[in-house]
Length: 218
Image (cartoon, rainbow, N blue to C red; front, top):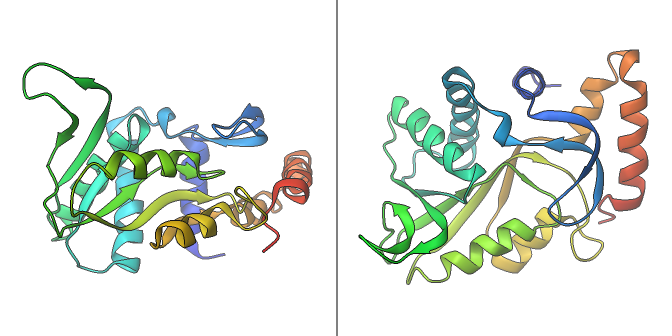
């Protein structure tokens, strides 16, 4: 396993972002592990998370300037931290996020931060994709921004789960909307990491059993 993947998984566990147990995903699936960016709660942690996203951005997108979009609520802090990390590495990009409820006073509107202009490319930064529900919601929101193209989506973990059919949720999103979805690590990296310690045998077995049912077949 690459060193940065190990470092990232250790970071997720240490920050309480990666947890094992019985959870319900936004898709409604009962899952044996959970990725919750809402557990990031210190300046050091959010700065570190932004650095991982920035590294993935430079690796996949390069020095190309885009606009970062962080879906409320967890995507907000990710977008801010990623933008800060990118700026520290010489790429100053704007960011914006949505309100859960449209503001009807003051400046109004559903978005906060930079307003993308026609022809600009947007990169969505999320915590995780399970069945693709959250990304489809983001695309519905972004459809109100005229002339803007989504260039890519970045998430922490590719769960390697099937979406609405037998294909992987991330693959379905790519095919449906025409942009790539990138992850820092995937669930098989997590399994490989856990298998190094026999104490994790139960969690490994539960995740493998879950993937046997819900894992992408294509």
